[in-house]
Image (cartoon, rainbow, N blue to C red; front, top):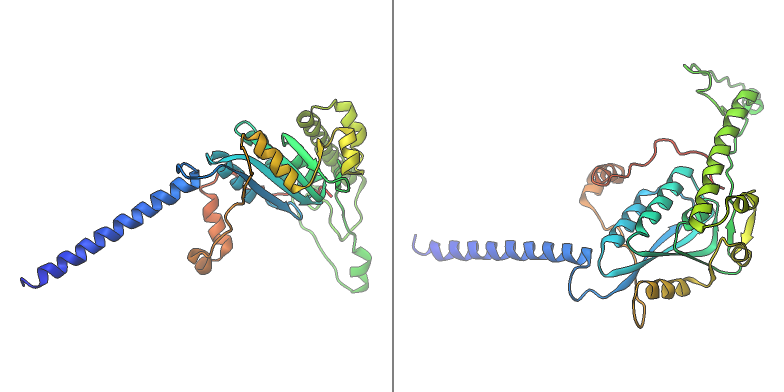
Amino acid sequence: MEKRRPVLSSCLLTLLVLVFLVGLSLITFTWWEKGSLWFAKDKVGVIEIKGLITKSLPVLKNLRQFAEADHIKAIVVRIDSPGGAVGPSQEIMREIERTRKKKKVVASLGTVAASGGYYVACAADVIFANPGTATGSIGVIIKLVNVENLVKKLGVDFYSIQAGELKDLGSPFRPITPKERAVLQSLLDSIHQQFIADVARNRKLPLEKVKKLADGRIFTGQKAKELGLVDEMGNFQDAVEKAGRLGGIKGKVETVFPEKKRFSLLSFILGREVEESLASLAFPYPEPAFLPPWFR
């Protein structure tokens, strides 16, 4: 019995040390995430928006994390997108507006930043574009398809049982009615006016001027600058340098990207969709159940 006590004491001491080290690691990681460690170097945070904009949650989360991190002095939003859905584009724009109250946000337009891509960019403090960047396209479009004749040739019949006259609006199995066309046109006109108003407000341009530019046309970056839709010509690195100076960084400006999603045991067991659903409970920005027409 006497011999067991030193062994038990050693095991208990080892366990306490491990618990202490794990706790210290968690606290240190939390401080590092918030940028409150004394040795965290000032940097510019970079958030990329690529391809069709169909989701906003990851970008909103990254914007908020960078906005709250003390060592992130400014943010660059790098956009390479032809547009996307209305809801997510508006949500990202609103979050950039909110972030600007804390830190400077610079938009860097790549190959293309049109329609929803430009909608997101217009909220930044400064917009950089290359002379040949395709941007603008301030307009809204919805495309419908009619396969009625095709299914008839295949000998297939489709039936719709609904409650609500317009519940199957846009059905591909019959021609669109005049009433349905009017409803859709009204919807698009409303979204278009929202787009125009947000660009005019964020870019500090007269509403009438933006209306003249909002016929859906694409502009080069150089032309967009002449029209006031873009502030400066420059590449990604130029945008980073500008953001660093606006954030008060002296000397070389270093960047940091959001941490990539690591392997998750929860995701492996339950699936990524279940994991993201659980994660969304802790982040108050639900994705819209209905995504309006494409900004393309």
